[in-house]
Image (cartoon, rainbow, N blue to C red; front, side):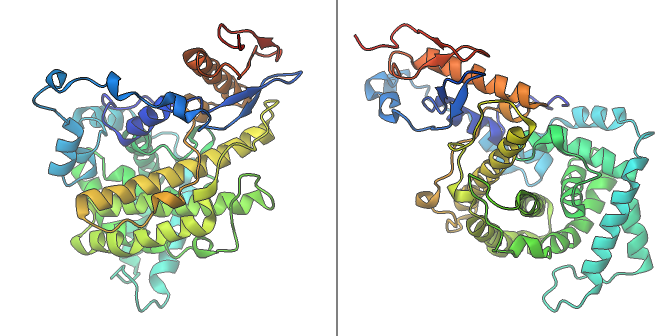
Length: 402
């Protein structure tokens, strides 16, 4: 995984991580003969973790001037690269120039899929189409050039290093652009191109934004309410995967269009498209997911895949809510996601989600559990801490009643 660009202290994902880190004992342990099982109950003994008002600093101790660099930059900038922590122009140029373009022809098939998707979207009769363009040989040539294998590789690198830390909802270790849907790859590529150090890439990305938006929101699976997610994932998991990725593509298109699109495009996202995303997430069941029922007694690939899917959906729902909150705070729009309907669990630590194997993922889960147990052991005396990987209960000071 490539290193994040920039200091990273201001990005939205950092805020979410801070909120997660301050929550009390979001995982509970159970002992098995092979390795520890994990119970994902994030709100146990929450009252014991409430901060006392007496511990807050006095008014005299608070600095007279509070500096919020992220908020200042966010409100004064209009573009993605300037408004968020996506790395400096110098850093993005260094990354851009370091990308090896010699091994990118494996993406030629994806380029053709994207061109076919764009042609199908722009040529069929749609009286309410937002594209405003007609497909032609010139458009086809421009599509093949912008979404060429070389550009796809460059733009995806810019996305992962520049934007992804701000909303890590895709499981990068298992992401394969060859097998992903053309809509998702096109959405990520356009968003990555918006952060390109080459001005020409940004201009062409803005020219293709409306077309990619139309293609992504034309995916029938996105509006298929018969596909519903649940924590136990009963039924066809592949259909759930496909609808989640279609929703993620729509989410990233909204990000790009809201900060880089035309005036009409921005208004369309804020007043129409994002309402669709919130409604789709609601009908999809994303606001009622948690990892409580996930069996993690052994690090099998099947269980790891299920963890990735559920955690990806939880993260997607979380960032949908965060962007909706941004629309409320900065654009004075009414909230579309109600706090009372959010029954989803909190996101897992980043190390667990970014693990490259089942064993690594579950080891990070165990490490996180033990660290939190040690931190809150005076209060959470009833939760045993298993040893890894034998599953034996280890006595911790304060772990038994007197």
